[in-house]
Length: 474
Ligand code: ADP
Ligand code: ZN
Ligand code: MG
Image (cartoon, rainbow, N blue to C red):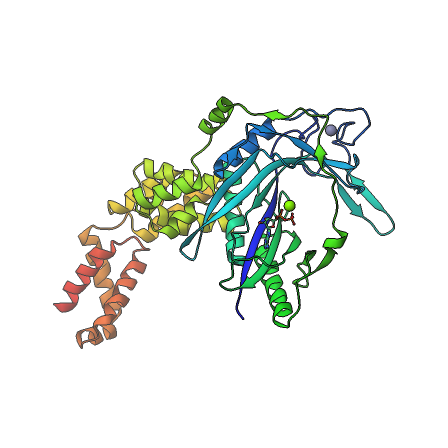
């Protein structure tokens, strides 16, 4: 029997607000444990939460970007459970009335577009962190009350590859909106994956398991691949899947059972009595809408349809907003889109990568690149020299025209100078000249190479080619 995988994701995104969701404590990461706490976030009796407006704004932005309906009326709820990192004994979350519902995100996998439904997006507070040492456990409450968005997808995902493509797309959107930095390794973006199998062609869903503790994009795929294989084996041997929560162990590359449905929590949700219901007015939604940047999907459409870029280029250039904006600036300054894209995808991204530099702190500006492209088009420098100039600008931030002038890199198109170089090369390689004249035409490339070398890369290759042909056939 062949099985089809059914996958739904539950994502937690830490919001990049300056302060926590219900108090004025800083959300900054990496400070001294328990230094960013107050009576509200450590759950002292008698204190009252005050909702951070910025959190609601970020939730609405995210909802709009994911094509959700924004609820005019939503409500916070208490999710009750006991754990040392949760001093109040409950987490303030949203339950039956979340702020965003009924959205979707489009992804492209292997050239096929897939639409993944977004069931809901709600706001909640993060818990603290337990730190286990050899003979004791410690609690750090700096993270308690840091705002989170929980984003839940419909069970619309059909493969591990689609799941990781979805996560990447989600991160791209969150980063475009500047609401979350999207770092899975550092835990600012976390993902629980629900997966079940069903016989191919069947409409019904099978029993699912939930995988927690996935902390990289690669592991989303790996954990799901493992879990699908495991369920396949159980089912094909006539067994049944137990509904349970499993943990991903990245070192061993396996998932293992954490708790079954029977041990599952009953959170006794009820409306949060310390907060009034949240009413969002239409004009605030409109205001937020008009403040939103152009999103990756719109850019992708523009790049392929208006700029004529291949899908591959467009996807790569739209993945990060600063890269997309750099590209668009170069095009605005007159660079041909495909030419700019080629330079960015090869030289620029490679140099950024090698030097571990973000594009926002890069010394090459779109203006520099457009100048280099122009120098090549006008025949002032060769493409190879252009690449060297680009690398030079990358290091120094100097103007390309100045570098060309200073280093004497202007291409030699002057015939008398080239003539001299060609004659010298032919004189120094009499055997090759004889072989060429005897019919080995492919030696032309060798001569061109020698002349280029003698000119330190500055000879105009086209002119060299012509001159060589003429001299060799005479
Ligand atoms: P639970 O009651 O366990 O919280 P939900 O219905 O709230 O389950 O769904 C939680 C997540 O699991 C969602 O992302 C949803 O898409 C996904 N999901 C639900 N049922 C299945 C299933 N049978 N197989 C895979 N994923 C599922
Ligand atoms: Zn606080
Ligand atoms: Mg649920």
